[in-house]
Length: 444
Image 1 (cartoon, rainbow, N blue to C red):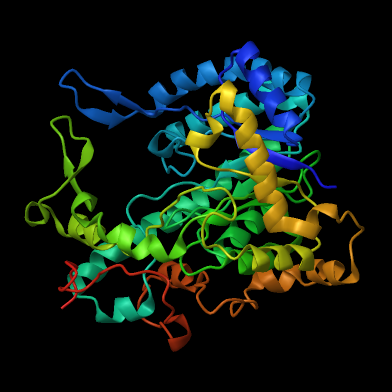
Image 2 (cartoon, rainbow, N blue to C red):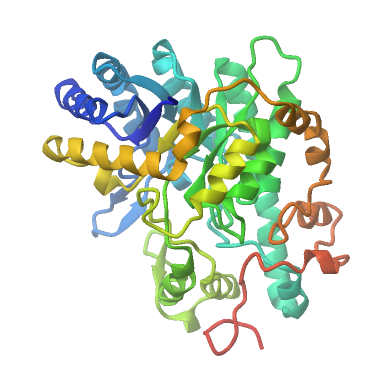
């Protein structure tokens, strides 16, 4: 039977961590993905105003995590479980692997590499990394929305998308460097909303571009993919992203959410999605749309589509795990079945963690069923999937899912006019950026 795994934030206290791990092991969980992110990446100034850490502040806090890696890892091994993987720090604005500022980017890369060097001895199967966050948009725009937008909106959006495209390329550059420096197996996780890797095409593009950069370099392993099933957004179905990734897929973050609640959930955020600055020049969320600029009002209108990232136990939401399992079977998925559920569950006390482990075991067994008992060699169909990966890279699978936007918007941007040659095939409902006057948006 294939191994069950869970993503877990550990304390660094060996006694507590090994007790928690043993309870999970006794409940049938055989492996752990250890989270290495700083738990709280905000600080307060003298006036009590909360702001994000600077990269330097985050680097200092990350040293505490790095120093605890041996204790956390040894607790897992001594419990009888395996260290399946490590989730590298992601830290939002403080972890700028996407930055065009070389100093900020190098700071982030060094934190990641130090985490890897401190943990390599525990022989994980791979390391999970985020492609990067992009906070200026909640979703990517559709061509239909672009065609209806005012010239003022298009000017703002064009600048935002150019910045996002630069972030994608900087992320690729950073992850390629991390893979080369460390020689370990890196897996890029998909993210939701307008964050990097938010569509199957972009997820594949990032991975394949990194591998093309490092191709032929000695002792550099190919970069793979981890699919966070609950992160699939922009109209993307998890099963379609699984098929797009094919043999690149090395791991899963299994969780659930209520997809049909996204729109209602996001509409309640409208007043909170306006940005203003505090006395120190840091951005914060406010309520008065009339006092902010076009970019902030544009941001405020992008409320439909930001997902409710609940991280429930698989089977507790509305994700179609039957379709997910069928797609995993089609690509002959051979990785572990890992769950990444809400912190309230994974931070459960030692007294209740055993019950949580049993629920987790039952949940994964229920949604994946017979797949857990399959452990076979690659099929002919899988070989065909690998042989056609060049077609995926070239974009011939752009009709894989009618809700998926490929990278043509970004290619048009690089030509200098992102809005000139948008065809009907791009009119996909990926996001709602501008909204209508009825729902508080900017569209006339």
